[in-house]
Image 1 (cartoon, helix red, strand yellow):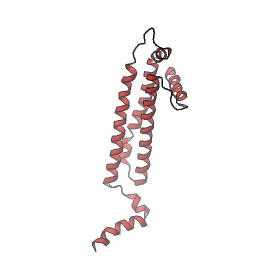
Image 2 (cartoon, rainbow, N blue to C red; image 1 turned 45 degrees about the vertical axis):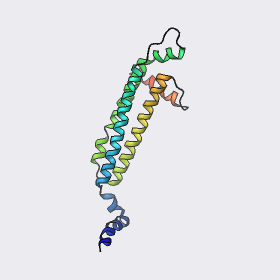
Image 3 (tube, rainbow, N blue to C red; image 1 turned 30 degrees about the horizontal axis):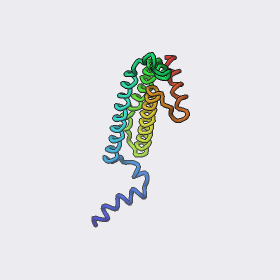
Image 4 (cartoon, rainbow, N blue to C red; image 1 turned 90 degrees about the vertical axis):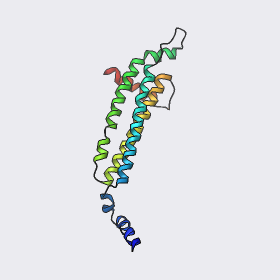
Amino acid sequence: MKKILVAAPLLMSLISPVFAAGEITPEMRAGAEEVIQSCEKSYQNTKDQRVRLSNLKKPTFLSSKKKKELYKNKELNLKVFDIQFGEFTIITNEKIAIRTVKTVPELKSTIEAYSSNCTRFSAGIANFVEWAVGGEKLRPGFDTIYKDWQAEARKK
């Protein structure tokens, strides 16, 4: 009898997708909170990257042309960082939407979008800092994106 009582809700959820999609379990909420915490850690790590841009040392007379160019763009790159980080802040504030959703499909889609945006922004900004500090060549296309960010920052 006990096995039937345990299996009945499981069977019912398999038969009726509406029933299964209607209830958000505490485990689902806990999983959502883990995603939010992970993004918060990425946010703090990304925030710390600004220090690397700020600490860019003034090149000496004998420094390479590349180092002089990187230093010349220091203030512009700090402005770019602040603009992009501001957008990242907006993304991380969407955690309120995750906590207030009422259906399972909505929760899943909201978490997927939040996680994807968090990953994309943190990686993009970290790569930008690497490019701005070290002058590193990145995958094709990133130079163009970062130069577009600089052009955008010049206008503001």
